[in-house]
Each structure stands twice: as C-alpha cells, then as structure tokens.
Length: 218
Image (cartoon, rainbow, N blue to C red; front, side, top):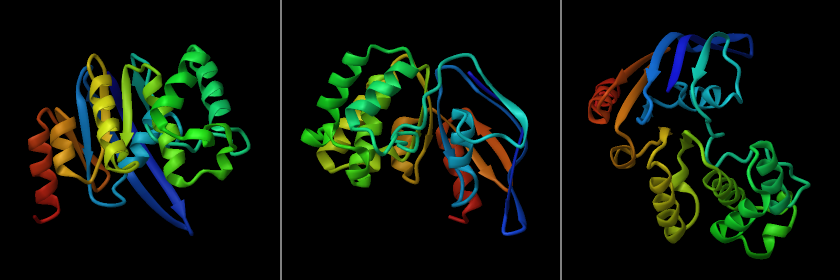
C-alpha cells in the first residue's frame, strides 16, 4: 500500500512557481496496478519519482508498507565510469541481493553482450535502459514503478520485457505511467488522473481512462 498524505510538490523555474500536486491525499491499495494518467507536464513522472524517493515532496508525506523499486528502466543512479556488471553488483549490495545471481540474470536478460563489461558512459540510451530494466526485474519488490518501459528495445525485446514484467506482477503491485491506453488496459487494474494539481483515484482503469479522455476533450 502507498499513501499520499497531503502531498504538495512545487517547482520554481526562471522565477515562476509551478505546483504539480496541491495537497493531494490518496491511497494506492496493496495488490493494485495503478495507471497514472494526465496531460504532458501534469506531474506523472514527478509523482513516480517522489514515490521512489528520488524527488522530495515540498509538503506532506508519502508512506508505504513494502519495498518499492526505483523507476523501472531509470538509469540515472548508475555510475558512468563503472561497467554494466559493476553497476549491477553495486545495486545488488544496496538492496541486499545475491550479487552473482543478479549479475547472471542481467547479463542474460539485457542482451548487452561484451558491452556488459564496458563502462556505462559508452552505452547508448537504449543500452542503458536495457541494463536498468534488467536490474529492476532481477530484484524482487512489493511495488514496481514503471515509466514507459515498453518503449525499450526492438520488438523482440519489448515482448520479452512485457512478459517478464507481467510475471513480476504476480503477487506485487505497480504504479504505471504510459501514453498508451492499450498498455494501460493490459497492465493496470486501477487508475489515477492528475489534472490541475489534483489527483483523482478510480478503482477501475476504464473509469480513469474515461476521466482522462474528458479532460483532453476526446
């Protein structure tokens, strides 16, 4: 379960203040896969990163009763001078996982070949995403945070990634950001719409999609 307790997030850019979440209170239940919907810039990715602890809230608090992943596919915390294998080993130690098992899993899943043992700074953005997704899926979490992960790689890798993620969802929750309503319907059971600093939670993903469509004038 994830609880947003009077959460506010405000940015100041070029002297202008922007509030993406304004005193939001909501509960994402245990076992639910929640799709986050909203127009571009509404605050979906910001909320995902606040839940992960990457971005601080301006006010309020976010509570959870289980282990939450970093955003799946997010490579921002990896060290560019370290190899893919070294980064995987480092993350395994942070989360108390078996290092050799995680490295073996990522090596096979990410399909990076010899690049797995080269510095991250030599990777393309797609290779970084493959590494990050492999590390994410190689660790067990109670809640997975996903930001457009199905965009990673070619068609075969997308298919494999989707199958792996659906397998991980057995017995786990998720918070999911995607611009694809087809993906939302496939991956999510519930939904939350962010609009004008407010968050509207729906127990059914179809109701959230309808709400978002009305906001967009579709």
